Length: 263
Image 1 (cartoon, rainbow, N blue to C red):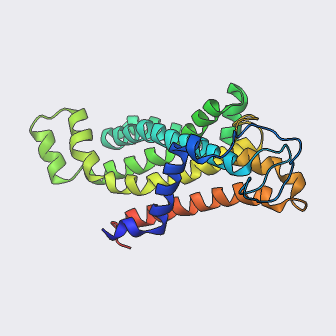
Image 2: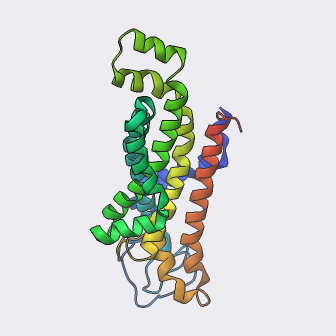
Image 3: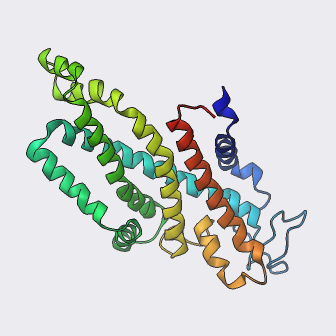
């Protein structure tokens, strides 16, 4: 099918293979330091050069892709698993239940995502796991709102009313009747949410609240490269380019899903 020839899908597939095979694709230990080769330029030994501690940038990029994808996909999955049922139930139940649930969601939406994530990580402490939980909480409202909108548009449809008349339980109606008919916008939202999660994880790591050194992370690598922008420009360009390409590919995948796989 033509969808598989999309550059976005091809790049994401390559990135997944790279992350899964990090022990084989990385040429060096990502935390191994070399005092004799700090800020060395790209070479056959170090394909993308070395950082200020002599660590291989290519190896750190490869291992960093694991962190980016693990938090991006994991946090988005957690946000969807919590937000979609919440939104579906609020939209189907309506009334006071809808009002109470959605006011809680609106409270999360009222806080800028980075500020909310910073507050959550500040309360729980820095680290990849806590950053992932914060990213999941930040992503939950978008899924809840989308699911609620779908439930509101579907709950008065004839097939939903027929299920109610047949005596089907609320859970069966929500998950077996309404959810399958509201799944399309949620699928389109998934790549966008993963892209936001990757960016947010990189931002938290850049600020020192996400992945902690010496573990590799794209955001942490960008932070460490700030003092060497002129003497070693490749140092910051590589992780920054990886973040940008990943976000662009995920947005392209979302657009492809919206168009039904037609390229």
